[in-house]
Every structure is written in structure tokens, then in C-alpha cells.
Length: 142
Length: 386
Image 1 (cartoon, rainbow over the protein chains, first blue to last red):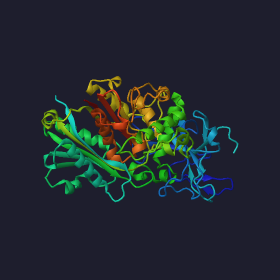
Image 2: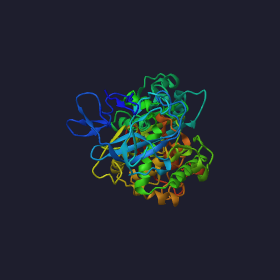
Image 3: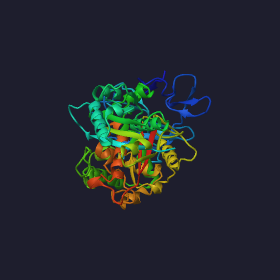
Image 4: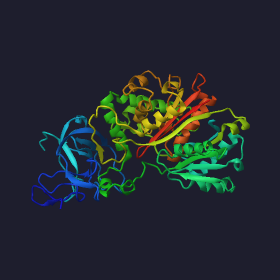
């Protein structure tokens, strides 16, 4: 199981299995190629890759702001759209992963800034919404 | 070995043509190209056709005539047209055929391309979370590039401004109204740093080229536009591509990642026995304004970062040292995937023949370069010489 406990003690669930480690705080799960050592995310099914926990902290490699609501399907986010940041986060020595960047103004985002893993609900206003991979600036107080 | 020559060109205007199917836009282009070459359909010995979303190209034999001609369909992402052209020139180089057709067309629905995770071997959650959006990738790629090489958002605006200015002079273009750089920069954002004017739209259109052996071209009495090189290449390790939930880390990440474009370009220059300095006019993939900027360097025309100066000085304008995207490129013409790469070659032939009218590159250009790039890391390049 890849569940997480929120503050009220009820279980939060990840948007898919085998994305987050089953620990508190959780980490992302990558896949290490058993032959080459190359790490990818998410961990592909099958024997070629072994699951490895990814570093919780990294730096912002690049980003953009998604300004319009993506088409549904496949997008399963809330109908009422507010723009969000698409981040590529470099986890040193491992891999660069695509995720949300949260708890920061769009104008304050800087390539190279340190960030920490902080999964967020796909729909912040829906109780029980699934968690997706996300990062927040290090030192964030939220 | 003697060169393959382009002896006929035809185009169906790009944009939106309600009531005309993609295949019929291809047929329109094929007939125009045959008329230009002075031949009829029964003389065409083979055809390669490319379409991504508008049906099987070989069905156009219904319209063109049931001559029993060999007709092979090509799908290869954004390199589809380039791949059809590459295949056609190989058929002639091999000695098997003397004259044939490369044709491409498409007709995409309005709005962004519709991609599903499973088609790219990605898990469903990736689409649920909102990442099956091509514009995110293009924006994230230029964002890092701007950070690394000091490219300003104004330079992106200059690229788009040039595209619409050139498109206004081009009969086959879709967007034919100039747009001021202020309007481009202040327009609503799609995906930062790109505003709506900095992305091309999926569209419609058809292009056809008649290729012939040099011997056949001389028989037809056409001015010889020689295809000095045509290459199609796939990506090297560690490249950053569309729909990437992860990207490889590399030991030294201070330079640009390798790309399929670099490989296709270097090989084309080697085959043609030329360098970037020998090129008089270039059509570079500009699905978004930053793509043209990055592709200027990836194709060897300038160093990474020099684009800032090049655009400010107008070096890629029609009257500049290296005119780029003289028909307005994808930004002004839209991107019907199957036709887009062939449109670039069409435009280059127009320029080499001196038929560009208001958009003609001055000084009698002798060499012309075309380049496409697309998902998931494919690129095709051609070099023409007259």
C-alpha cells in the first residue's frame, strides 16, 4: 500500500500504486535499470527495473506554468481551473522528475532553487482527492 | 553518383479549408506538382505519402488514376514529410526508378493535439495529473535554455513578429496579418514564457514534390534543383523530449543536451560537402518561437546564446545574412503534420527559382536548408542546391 496519513488520521491515497514509499514522510519511487544503473521515474513494470526510493530534496531544473485547463479526458483535475506550475526537479545523482511545484508565487520561481518533496491532492477542495507528486520550496512554512 | 532533382512542386494553401478532406488537399498539391513538372500521373513511377491524422495517402489513387503505381504510406511523427522525401530520393538513388512523388497532407481538429498516455507507453495517472500537454514540454525546454544562454523573452517575440510579417507576404500561409511585438509579448500566456502568438496551431494543408533522376530532369528541361542531402535521425541518449515524466541526470549539465536535430544536421552537411556558412536560406522547425531560436544553434548556424544578437540585428530577416522561415514557418502556416516538412522544401524550391515575389530572398540564393523536429525525438534535414 502506498497510503499516507493526513493530520486528522484519515488515510490519503496516491494517484497510482507504487508511486510513493510507504513511510512518513513518503518519498517518490523510481526504477533503477538492473544492467545500466540508469534511474527513471515512475518505476516501469517488469524485471528490468528495481524500485528505488528517490531523494526527498533536489533543485529546480526547469519549469513552466500551465495556464489553461488541459483537455478531459485524460485530465482529472477540478473543473474550476487555476493555473499550476509544471516543474522538472533534479534529484542529484539520480534523475530529473516532472511534478507540480507548490507554495510559491509564479514570479518567484527560479531555476536552481532548492525544493523538497511534498505530495498534494489533485483537487485541493475535494475531500479524499488522490495525491500527486509535488515539490515545495525548502524553508516553506506551509 | 548523379543527384536527385526536384522537378515539380505543388501546394494546397495551409490553414482551414472546410469541406475539403485532407486527402483531397494532397491530391490538389499532387496535381499542381505534376503540372509544374510537365508530366501526367501515368508517368509517376512511385509515390511516398505522409499523413498523421487524415487517412491513408495511397487512397488518393482513386482520384489520380488507377495506374497500379507503387504507393507507400509513411507515418513518422513531425518528421513524416521529411521521411517521405527521404524515402523517395532513396528510390531514385537506388536506380530502381527515375521519377516519383513525395506527397504529404493533414487535417487536424481545432485546438491542441489530442494525446493519450497509453500511446506513449505512459501510465494513466500521468494524463490524469494534466501532463499530456505538448506545450508544457516546449515551454519547459525553452525556459531552461533561456536561463542557460541568456535569451530574453523579447527575442521570442521577435521570432513570432517575423513569422507573421513573412506570412503576410505568402499566398500559402494561414496567418497573413502582421502582429506587433508588443501585442505578441502582452498576449495571454499559454505556457510561460510563451504567449498565444508564440505557438503554432495544428492545421490543414497539402504539399507535393516530384523528384527525378538528373537524367530525367534534363529530359524534362527543368532548371536543376538538386537534393544534395536528405537525412532523418532519431535522438541520442539523455535528450529532453515531449511527455517525459523523467529526464536523465548527466555529469556536466552546463551545456545543451544532444538532440536528433544536431545529428541529422551534421550528417546532412557532411553528405552535401557544405557547412552552415554556405547556406543562403533556411527553413527551421518553429512549432513555437523558441524552437526556431534553439534550432538555429542546433543546426550549426550560430553558437548557443548568439541568437539574442542575431534576432536584434535582423540577421534572419528576408534581407538578412541568413533568412529563416521565409514563408512564416509553422507559426504563420500552422502545422499539418504530414505536410509540414514538405512545405519547407516547397518554400526552398520557390526561393531557389526566384519565384518568391514579395518574400523573395535577394541576391539570387543558390543553397537552401530545411529542418523538422518532432516527438519523440526525430528530425529530418534537407539541403538543396541550384
